[in-house]
Image (cartoon, rainbow, N blue to C red):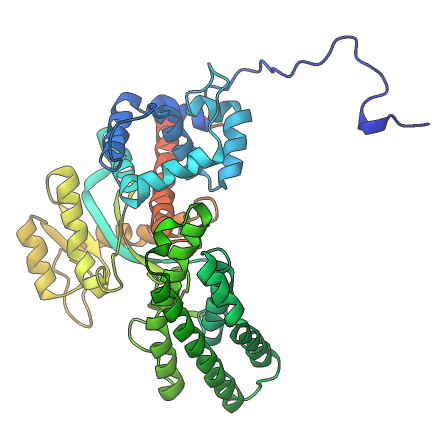
Length: 464
């Protein structure tokens, strides 16, 4: 039997099928419960304050803040790409309800969602997350009188940073950027064609034929000489460009800025590579990513993963399971000995007083930290002691704090799962990596808030 063209049914329908479904949204759906639990007037005031602190002025059309904040919460509670979020908001009824779009046909596109995320940044997402935790405290679902702190690493989605990979990535990125950065840099690409070809051959030789340590070091030394020659020519071209860069537009301007970043980065990275080649030791403050030089290595000492590459975070857990996240501005800012005190300062800033009991692992233990925490108002300081040192709390309080301390690991493990995307996020800059980290913690807290509300009201939550 012959089939109709285009895959359509051969039996025509008497009435055309409607493309406007009328199925009602379940009242116990996860996104519906979340929408109804939020004080949108208060939350939008918070977001508007964040927005106005970052824009130059209030000119232009007012943004669709209600829809943008709903989209933020949608993406936070389940990690997805911008295009997936655009599709869900356009066609998925609970998502439209969360975004306040059930009475309109308008829907934000992926570019609008991206611009809003960039505008918020890590600090904006952190403020929104703190608002969610305060709501949990107001609803008696979280108890800020018992707090636990810990640190963790947010891994970046980058390859293992060995020296040859870094140099190969630099040459590839430089060749791509200089072709679009203006006429002078196009000429540089032509003049440096020999260096680009030689670099590609050395990378192939290193990967396929350099089987001994001596052979790899020899190829690496030759690759370094090629990069030094390319860097000299690039520096001359940058100086010769002068004010011509001011006349560039659109993609040429972006490419020119990228060329400058690559040149500056490689000026710092080449001596570090030379130091490793000469001594066999990694240089201090080693650059581990060509595109995100702000990243750093974090020594964790774990079985099978001694070092992680990315950003360091401090995690504070309130009794009840809700989390607060603090981003380290550099690799030394949030070491355990410092964050053990800073976590309490964060709670004092948010809730107006120090927690009654506070726990941390032995990495944060010291007589200085115990004295500092007690001076801030913490009555039960449960820093796990080192060696044979006695606990500074009673046996009953010790058992309570050890139990709370164990549960912070579960919260950290949950935000690192693929549902929230804390680790190895889809980000091309350290700034957006930090935003993804705060958004993951926000999604964890919002999902927990919905579950606790449903449990209190004896409602089964629908929707994944």
